[in-house]
Image 1 (cartoon, helix red, strand yellow):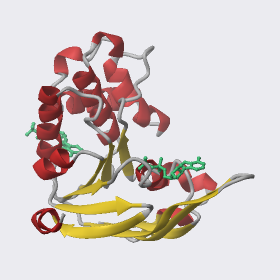
Image 2: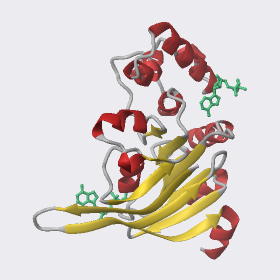
Image 3: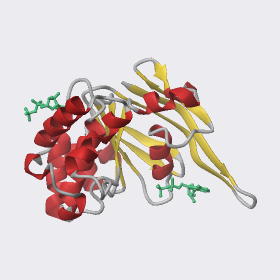
Image 4: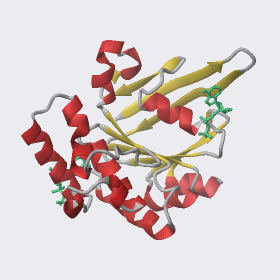
Length: 231
Ligand code: ADP
Ligand code: ADP
């Protein structure tokens, strides 16, 4: 379970002060898929960066199975980050590495021996339907296939939380459906999934629960059908 409490993120520059997240709280149990939907400027990217520990929140906590990630020291940050698998909008693969080596990369960083990390990477490629593409380079793949590689890479370290940042907004409708089917297929009792998107049809298709983010605050939250009926 991931529990976010009163998350605040402020940006201060010489001429501006922005409170991009203004006390965001949410809980996502293992085995469920939670959507966070909001318009441009609502704070989605900021929330992704804070949840993925790419940026420190100004205040508030992010607790995953009793560990408060915001309390991780810089030395522990890498290990804390491994509890959350991040899937980017544009996959963000290394073009100079083969597909299987991209998927194995987080395990390489974690110091896993080569034979083991390659075996795990191949297993994950099979899970996302890309066994045949293991040895090719990302530039040879379609956008949807690259996104599958990004998903396999995010799962490599066995995260407790899988976090999707606009996973389908760069894809055509058919490929979008395939990726959404895959997200549903990856649902497991020990994995909490969070999908951040500006697309309501994505939320309607795969989410159990949803939060509506506006001006850095969650203004609606609950089971999918309840929230949709209130909108
Ligand atoms: P979204 O992803 O929903 O479009 P963002 O998280 O990018 O929203 O932005 C939320 C608010 O925070 C906006 O007002 C934006 O201008 C501001 N913001 C985002 N990043 C920065 C930054 N690095 N410095 C200053 N302001 C920022
Ligand atoms: P399938 O039935 O489609 O072959 P499995 O559930 O048997 O998929 O999983 C195949 C491999 O992928 C196993 O090693 C399993 O641990 C791993 N796996 C499956 N789903 C996930 C997931 N959501 N996160 C991490 N690993 C997963």
